Length: 317
Length: 292
Image 1 (cartoon, rainbow over the protein chains, first blue to last red):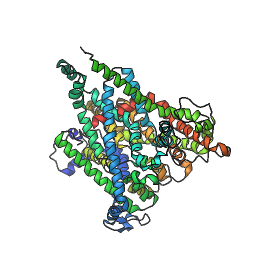
Image 2 (cartoon, rainbow over the protein chains, first blue to last red; image 1 turned 90 degrees about the vertical axis):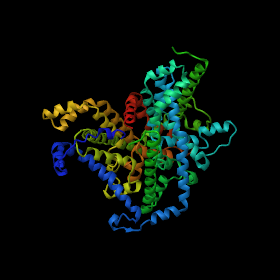
Image 3 (cartoon, rainbow over the protein chains, first blue to last red; image 1 turned 45 degrees about the vertical axis):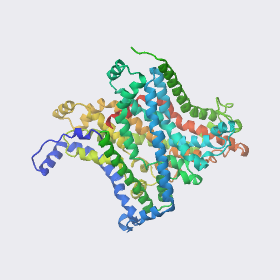
Image 4 (tube, rainbow over the protein chains, first blue to last red; image 1 turned 180 degrees about the vertical axis):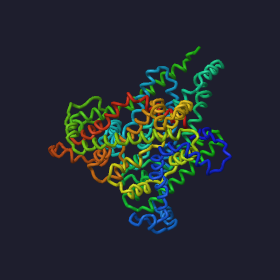
């Protein structure tokens, strides 16, 4: 994405557009032919649903379709903003997102920096192999584990009881939902998330370290003045992407972990859309909630990218 | 050259200790599952604390798991999804990535932009579901395979790999009159083979773990992939179908170890393959990172 601009090799044609068009198709007809399945995929499964989101402005019924359903303007959006759940799910989404920004975002960066300071290659490899592992385990299995470990007879409660605490089924406690979500998120993503920063670290010019050493910089100073500046662009890019997903708290994990007892802290926009749309078949309304989510995300992504371009000269495009 | 100060030594030890702690925290829950799955059900129920070895040795849980038709169906369905989904995804991604890496295509950047845009903006869950419904795909495996046939991230990785192939190679083949498919399979593909391996693995893991689309698009339990069957057992806590032939009193204890055995059975294939394939997975992230 970042270097798309550099690839543009625009030949300076002076011929009219239609002539260029014909010449291009004649020259590349095989390539365009081969691209048909790919383009068809993106149109049918990506752009058609994008068009389909206009049902957010309809009282939609699948029987009548988009052309047959009644247009209701912003009614679905107004209904959502005045819904008693609106504040709750917006608050939960923002709390979970910000907690994840504060705890899950820096964790892999710190981990990568610590790993970078390890001297033994074999030890580093073992740390990597083991900490990348949870990334490959199915979300269903991970959530199954979380459930088993946090029930009143699970081993986390065994530890709590050992230290004199009281046993409880932790996933039924609204106060514990966010901590459980965040801690398990770190467990899942710590190792895998660090790869991208390790990649940036291996690209650091070794001469910079030598120069810093000659200037008398110790390891802490080297980290501060060489290592951290070197990974900053990667950190900024990852941060922008994270901001662009701030309202996208994934429904997979939420749906697998929450229950009506914890809706008050666990129900987020995506899980609300899933319930309203697929379980209650409230199509137009849930599409409106989904659209609200996508639009806010997209605006945040563009804003974060703009700001970053202005202040750090790093951006997605 | 390097001076080892006292502070540095303390830091080195501190660093290693943190890493060891993190490794234990990552591995222990998985080991616990393995120990619990082989444990004697009743002893496991009464046990409290951290398991350091199986309590007794019982294969009862595994016997029920392998005797369970839902799990075996799930396994078969998942294998079909993995093989078909990976094959389809890789073919489309390789051909697409190659075509979009060719220079001198007037529409190339427009198509790339339209594709990249879908990574940041999409129709959302409900319109996507209704689209699948309107196409008449509900309750078919195609509903799981087709809408996620291509992963845009994988497409970008593949394209990046093809972009790094020197133009002169392709151009000389074109002058020799080779068509694009021949150039792709004879010249470009062999040069990009490591990246192809990466995306094969990415698609396979994605398909192996798939459950959400299966849950919303499938009704017929016979078509459920393994991950969805697991959801019933682990999340909705129903092992009733598996403990039918067990005495009433034992039901609870057997169902507990079954849950752990099911996790082992479903995760083992990935965990066994993973150490051998790790370097490919990592390579994919690195390529993606360079691309931003």
